[in-house]
Image 1 (cartoon, rainbow, N blue to C red):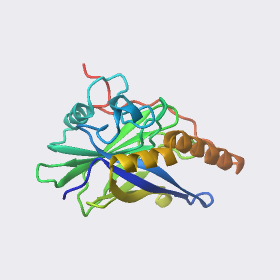
Image 2 (image 1 turned 120 degrees about the horizontal axis):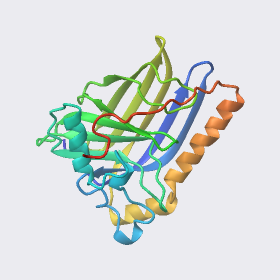
Image 3 (image 1 turned 135 degrees about the vertical axis):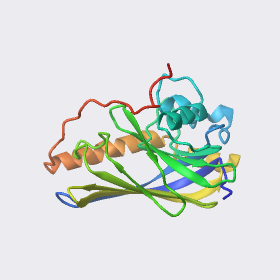
Image 4 (image 1 turned 90 degrees about the vertical axis):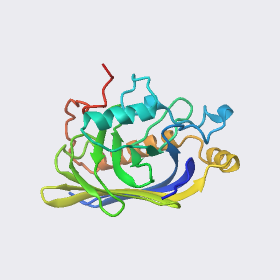
Length: 249
């Protein structure tokens, strides 16, 4: 598999909850598929105040190491033998000093370009981060226990079923949450890959200059709407980052 990176992703995001009532939302946003070894390769230096992908925005914020070292430490701490010869990262860009990336997806590839597995790094609006290692293949998804508080309207319980797809022209991630034997929530993000030429990057940033700010505002807007529907709020419990996401000793 030869996947262009860096690439622009004009992504479509969809969420759907089914309990205790159906609530759906969808929006478009600008995302980027980048090589962890050089995540800012597609962004001209003078444009990086408006678009950049920084290592401190992922895993431990105070760990100064570059992204490949952080990924390697996480894999080792989790006992995973993936080579992660190349790591492609689907992420939102930092803009004007702010980034909010609900889900950062790391596609870990071997030396022949085959997918070894995926890391799903989840960020909540409280500044916390959690990473799920997924032993997926190009034809099979993975299931993991929900261990992280994301929405204040869902308890930290149940299972996520996660499927990913990465080709030379498209990327997609789909998540289903099952609680009490019932599928209660689905989310997906997908879009075509466009090589991040300078002209495409400039047009994308001009058309959507603050995507993280907009995503964060949309999450809060829909949260207020759900609260007005008298959906019960689940108290947030203390979160312990998994092995490999903390600062190195």
